[in-house]
Amino acid sequence: MGEPESVQLSRLVDGDNPISVIAEAGRIFSFWFDEAAWEPVGKAAAEIVELFLGHFPGYHACDTDYHDIRHTTDVLLATARIADGVFLERGPFAPELAQALFIAAVCHDTGYIRKSDELVGTGARFTSVHVQRSADFIKAHGSRWGLDATRAGSAARMIFATGLKGEFGEQDWAAVREREAGAVLASADLVGQMADRAYLEKLLFLYYEFKEAGFPGYETEFDILRKTMGFYELTIKRLDDSLGGIRSFARTHFNDRWGVDRDLYAESMGRQMDYLQSILDDASTNFRKKLKRLDLELSQPKTA
Image (cartoon, rainbow, N blue to C red; front, side, top):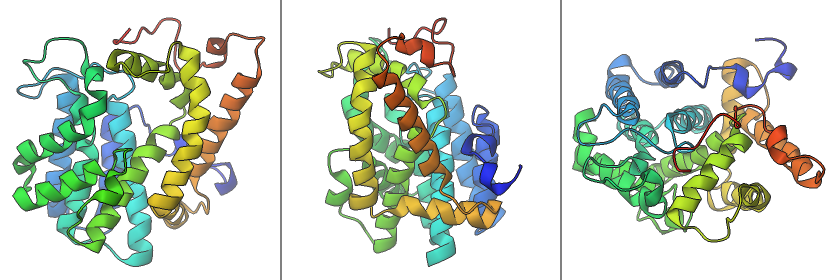
């Protein structure tokens, strides 16, 4: 792995391999709970991968390039790492609550997947309602993974917490630790995507999702890069204010499990924003030439 001071987030796990990411989430889960407790979570994760591939009954394959399986597994792993830090400092959740949290993580963006009878456009058309659709999905299918109606409702509340319209604070949480689990997932959803080493490149895919969804104010690809700086500032405020700074427990995880006393998510996000600022400040070069971690010249978004 190298010296602790040289470790970067992207080098710990192969984020492009869903199986590797799910295995790492399972490894972290196993620090606290037995194999039987992981079994329904692992089953849910495997079936959600199949959902995104188009092998889940009643649904099309994923056709959104930003909200893809990589985003979902990034969020699952961030959930596992932040939760592990919380458990190390505050004690673990009950196994049932931990299961609901991890299953909510893999289901949190299922609302972008079109049902078989939804034939027009791509899943991007559901951008404004995807949180509700994702909550509905886990209520409809949670029994596949051992969630009864009560626990599926708990997982749905965690998914609602990822909404950006104040849903976290407005939730009627069943218990303090359920609310804490909601904060873990909502924080993981933000840091998981913004710490992805290809985040800036994938923003161009997000532009096409916004375009199909009819979001105003995004007339060109460059608009989404420019507005991301403001989104980052609002995100930090949301993470450290309304979500209570629970993202900081990731540092406890990295220190205890990897011997790295740093918040690798915060560092990666900071590097992304520093590089984005350099792109915005340079009017002499086409911004696409500075986004090289995906082959943007060859890759055409499905929503384009």
